[in-house]
Image (tube, rainbow, N blue to C red; front, side, top):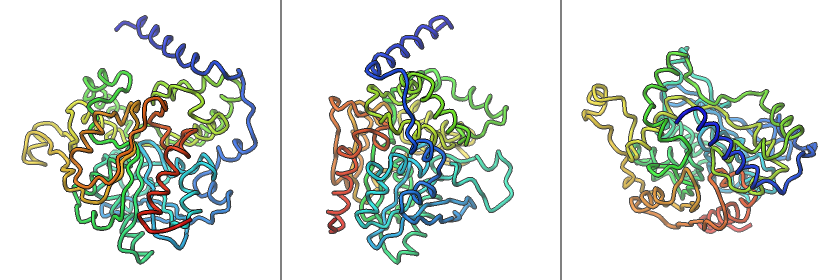
Length: 403
């Protein structure tokens, strides 16, 4: 496609974005909470709303330092795990009335907020690694190293044998990796709730994914030669840009990226009164190799380990092709939430996962009429009714607790 056609397509997409937001005024009045919350990290957000958090550092077997935020309560522990390029902030930025972390704590559960290696909170290593060495990881290491370290720490300090798990997007991917590659951890999971699960992604609907997947090796070699081992880094200055965007421009302009990247079809599905706060906290950092791993999954139509190429695959895996993750080994009880219009957790791919998991207790598919896109499982206007309340009820019922 020539440059002129690309520009035409971009214009048409932007026009579509503007049309679905045409019921909004051309400017937005920024509330005082926006100005405060946009600049607060997870500890600051929890403290502001009276939750007395703790910040805990845990070192993995391979030396990465993983930070978690803890909301101490007397109930059973529950671990919340964010999506790709996100952080613990995602479970907090909608505020106490809509964000799941606050509500679980209010229900008496002992809440732990995970941060995977490489995001804004988990960027240390016990050794003096070079940048290239540090960023040499994908979601496999998050599942085989980061999650086990976090789970072991939580169970040790709470004197519990099991915990409950809530993961969103990549947070579901690394759970499936952990339970298939380190199956002993199935016995440490009381129940798991997978929001918009991402494993098989052969039907991914992200724009230009076909072009990217065909050229992934070239793109990776270019970014590698430029020293771009990290993608989508967190920037403190983004809070200023986000606030200024919503002060100065039409909301359709500031929301355009959410349509392009996540299939957002209706501006009312991401709260205008919190969008600048959300935008100031994401992205929070990801390794280029991790993004490549996901793209490989799209190209191969398999939920597989990292593809190093023929020669190295033979050395690492003793096979030309990387092995698949054996999700039949995921024996922990699983509840799945998905949406019929999700671009990332596409309905056909979710059905593949469901058919191969041996212990699915619940399967909730949100109808396309709800216009519920991927990002809305954490950041949506309707997240309270469609996600939070059912998740809380599942946890309380299964743990024999009451509000």
